[in-house]
Structures are given as structure tokens and as C-alpha cells.
Image (tube, rainbow over all chains, first blue to last red):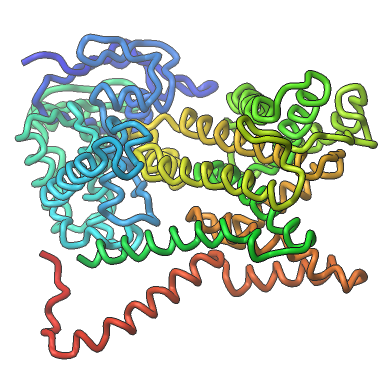
Length: 257
Length: 336
């Protein structure tokens, strides 16, 4: 196993608030890692720093050994880091199929003039793109609704579509921001199964979530943060038994302060 | 099979439209109408230029400003440097595109209403320069005596409105074909993605800034070409041709026609170019009626005329198809 992502000394200050301080962790290739912590612990900030939506005050983010601090989000995606959003961020006025096509088409494509009939390999390109899109829709079980406008999908399907768009970029690391927030138990179970299947295909997964039972069942390795610092790290059992983690969740003033 | 037959239908419509457009000067006589048809084509090129900018989600009110850059550049290049028309024409587009490239890097960071306000101010700035930089623009008097276009291998110049029509039509068709290819290409999909959600587009590997900048440069290039055409058609340009109201007009052409297809800005130009002329008989009421008609369009066709055409075509197609389905089983519509 090799290190896919490593974060060292990561800090982010907003004015006087230390949202993240001196956080270090690494993610092994092929694993499912959970990032947990109570509300306001800095999970989402860590997520945004890793994706490039925000710039760290200090520290380093390395992907496959390469420092990616200076890269904007779209270039990190091209390296193989994809993310989903906490809320359902979709192309809401477009069909489900078009949503996935846009994820697929971002990185590759023929030149402009191939759109002219008779020039280039436009049709072969388009057919290939559609085939890959339907494969992905099969994978997330959305083929039947491929021609429905995204905004009209049920909530659970919208979240699956969000994952499908991210998968369309062929990521090595898929980062999921609270993938089961607002879901009922049946939808949550389906999402857990989908994430496992993605992982089985060789994609490394980082999940930010505060649904504890979901994370404990899904992840092989867990990093617990509170007040922007790492509290504990290890297997679900180790983390669950850690007194600092228990204190942070139940509110022990001595430890959490 | 359905897709193929509708593609043939579309091809027939396009060929018929091109042939029909080509024949206009053979049937339309009289300078008044020819003038309007020439202006329609020039305006259509400009409205198409704005359409590609709108396609990335940026509403520019500086389009007439970029038109002015092209118009003044083309006029002066032919008047002062005696360049042939075709060279001046292309250079005017390139100059407008270059200005867009330099400014775009900065102003395309602005979003929504801030971009609109900035481009409004930019148009006013260009308008003021055209009034005050007298040595370059002739000031309020404008530039007179701009030459009619000349073309290589064509004897004489395109003096008449009928001759000019073919030049404008050729430029319009080239612009349309280029944009049609561009919108079909992966870059077209990128523009749609950036317009609908910049956040998601960026998170799936698109560079929103680059997409918006390319669209802005291409749109301004077309604005420059349109400015050059209008300068050599009217043979006279002055600052009042390029006020921000002109920018609003190009925006209205897209809105009235429908900004989500290439047919939209064209139909908008066809409707809005002659409209003030029709209303000219009611001089006192001209502005009032113009405004009223625009409001009626927006009230009853908020997605533009093309959406109404699309709906009626679909209604006709469904109506034509209905009898054939009578004996067919109902379940034939389910997806594989």
C-alpha cells in the first residue's frame, strides 16, 4: 500500500479563529477513510483545503507525492482528485444524462472543427461518450431516469447523481462531503453500498460525515478532529474507545477546551 | 429513425433558409427594404457575438463598445492607412478581440450584477473616448466618407445596398457556421456547464475563467467585425451609434429571440431591426410602442420566440404522428 494523499502541518486561520491547526494525516491507496468530528470541528474546512477551494495559511497537501497547494481545484481534478458537495450541487436545469456527460467531457475531447459534419471523429467520440455515460448511470442505478431534469429527481437520486458526476472524472481519490446528510436509513444503506462498490473498483475514498454509525460501518480507518486539531486516528474500534473522542462528542470541558 | 428524419427536416429548412436569404435582393427592390435587410444581417452578426458571451452566463452591456472599436478601427485603417477593406475588416475584429482578452482577465472575475454594471461603465467609457478623442474618432462629428467595401477578385466596390447584402450574408453565414460547430463541440458543453454551475464545473475539471475568457474574446471578435461592416455600410459613424442603448438592443435581440439557441439572436435581430421603422409613423408614440411591444414579448414569450416555434413544431409533429399510432400497443414508449 502506498500513500495517495498526505497532509502535513495544515493550518487555516480566519481572522482570529483557528479553523484548522497543524493537522497531519495520510490516506493509503485503496482505503476508505472517514473524517469525523462534532459540528464546527473544521471538517469542511479541511475538505476545502484538500480540494483547493480554500488556501491554507500553512502546511502542505501532497497527492501522489506531489505538492498540490498551488493548483486550482480544476487542475487537482485532472490529477485524479474528485469531490462531491454537501448540498446537492448539480446542473439542475439539465438532464441526468447531460450532467454525467459534462463530467466525462471535461478532461478530453476532440477539437472544435470536429463538430462540423464530415470532419473529425465527432460521431465516434459522441457515441463513446454516451456509452461511458450510460455505463456510469448503470453503476449508480440511474439509467431509467437518464432523461429527467436533475431538479425533478428525488433527493436520494440527486445525491447519487452527484457521486456519478464526480466518478465521471475518473478519480483516484473520491472525496465525499457528508454523503448521507438528510437521508433516511434506506437511502443511507444504499449510499454505503454504492461507496463500497466504488472502492472495490480501486478508487480510494475519503468521507467527511458526522453520522457515526455510517462512518463506523463503512470506513477501515478514521481520523477524528475537534476544534481544528486531530484528536485520534485508527480503526473504528480504537477511535470509538478513545477518551478524547468520547469527551469531544459528549462535551467534557477539561478535554475539549 | 426519428432522429434521422428530424435531421433531414432540419437540413431542408436550413438549405431553404440560405437559398431564400440569397434570393432576397432579387425580389426586394427599393432602398428602404434593402437597407433594413442589410442592417438585419449586421445586427444578427452582433447578436450572435453576444450570444456566445451569454452562453457562459455573463451578461455584457459593453457589446456596442466593442462594436465601436471595430467600426473606428476599420474606418481609420481604410481612410488613413489606405488598407484594403478585407484587411481592415479582419484587423478590426482582431483588435476588438485583443481588447477583450486584456480586459477579460480582470473583469470576468466579476459575477452577476457586478459584471453587468462594469460592462455598462465600460461602454460609457468607450462612448466618451469616441466623443473626446477627436484626432482618432472625429469627435461628435464622427467620421464621414468611409469607403464602400472592396473585395479581392471583385471589380469595383460594393456600392449598392444589394451588393453589400451578399457580403453581409456571407459574413453572417460564416459566423453562424463557426458558432454552430463550436456549440456542438466539447467546448459548447463546457460553456453550458460554466453557465449552469461554475462551482460544479470547476469541481469536475473545467477551468471556468478560461472558458469565459475564450467566449468573451470570440464574442468581441464578432462585435468588431459587425462594427466594421456597419461602418462600411453606413459610410458614416458617430458616437451615438455606440451608446449603451445599442448594447441593450443586442441583449434584447437575444432575449426576445431566445438566448438558448443560435436561432434566437437571429430571430431577435430580424424582429428588432425593422421595429423602430414600422413605428416611425407614430413619431410621438415610437418609444412608448417599442417599449410596450418588448414588454408583451417578455410577458407572453419569456423564453423567446424560438421556444414558441419549438413548441408549435412539436405540436404539429405530434399531431401528424398520432393517427399512425392508433393500432400500436401503448407500452412501446418504455426505455430499453
